[in-house]
Structures are given as C-alpha cells and as structure tokens.
Picture (cartoon, rainbow, N blue to C red):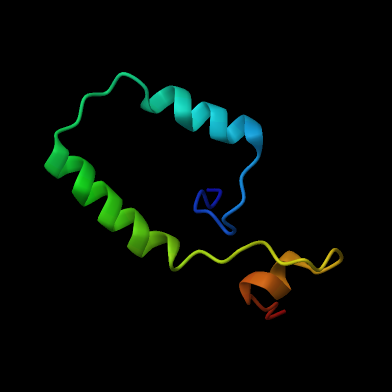
Amino acid sequence: MENKKRIFRELSDETKAKISQSSKNRPKTDSHKTHISQSMMRYWQTVPHRPEIEHAMMDDLIGTEDND
C-alpha cells in the first residue's frame, strides 16, 4: 500500500483546492477549533520544507537505505 503521509509541507494547488472543498460547510465548536489548531501546530513542527536541491534522490531525503 502506498504511503499517504506528507513528506514535505508544500502541496500542489490542486491538492489544496481538494482539501479546502472537502472541509467546507462542516460546523465546529470553538473548543473543537482550538484543539484542531493546537494539534496542527504540533504536527507541522515535524514536517520539513521541500529542499532546494533539484537532483536529490527521494531515498536521500527520507533516509531510507537499500539492503540488497
């Protein structure tokens, strides 16, 4: 199964639009909004920005190794 977790903070505009559309018209209480905000701040501290290196391999960026 494909890994669905974010590797970098930056998303495509198409993905941002899909997330925005799916979140519309969902009522939330003020306390729920506060809890979501706090948890998202903690989450985003763990997700790195996309590096500026153009030719880096994905394995180099996420730290996996081939053990053949």
